[in-house]
Length: 332
Image (cartoon, rainbow, N blue to C red; front, side):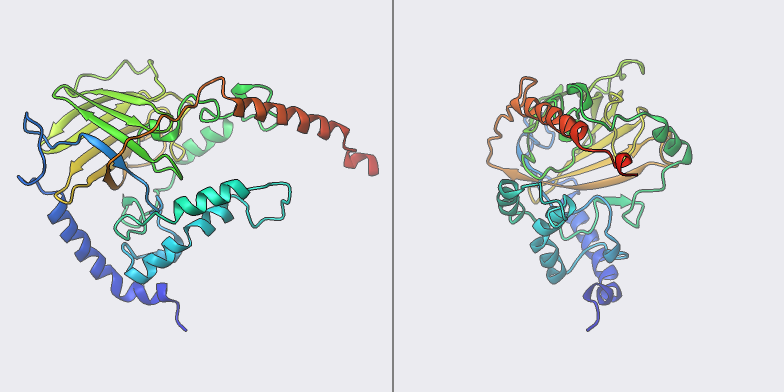
């Protein structure tokens, strides 16, 4: 029997292009029917759910396919849990890792997720749905940065997320999480606040398109400045702390976010990564935020978290075990 993904390449491209055109016309055009604030701007206030199963880059089996048909989409959605479990090594030969609790949690969570309008990739530019090649100079720069690979000696040897300093969703661009992919938007005439559930951080963004901070002043969430372009809220962020890198980006990365409220009640969230130090040209991705009744809950992560204490205690045990284990050199 022929591979359904191969057969789909013959019929899906035209249908997907037509579908995207219709969606763009229906959802993103300025329309009097969308709810508006008392001062006339699209009302972005509320709780928003941004869980989805569409990958950033188009998987190889979907090459040339922008939008899946119902059967293909259901197959991808039904196998979401198995893909995640395999990626983290559930089916590996490592018998020392127990994922029972995580499996039960993730299986239930992923069972409720769907693709974003059956799309096969968040990336819309380049058209192939893949990241553009990284510049050789940036690849060399990343390789030159020393990385500590031994047993963690202290909190500084663990990730910012494990240290409860920030989560990827707190720093633009906003990318989905396996859980806690919820946020709240509070919009006024002068400011917009985007509060993510994880790590329960708030970005407070002035809407007067003021100049960003001086280049040498870095912040964990960057320096964000916003303005309205018609009915689209545009947020430009620079000055992100060098501890954060998105898909290999450099500290020079600029993120341009566009939030557009559609007539279907969803927010279309689009972002462009402009980093000439890493890629030859900017690239763009996007997806939808769905309205939610909320509320969002406090993700009570803090620097006294006992998880980090346990991680470092485990490292000390692993370190002692490694010292006690006879070296292969002794048998030569």
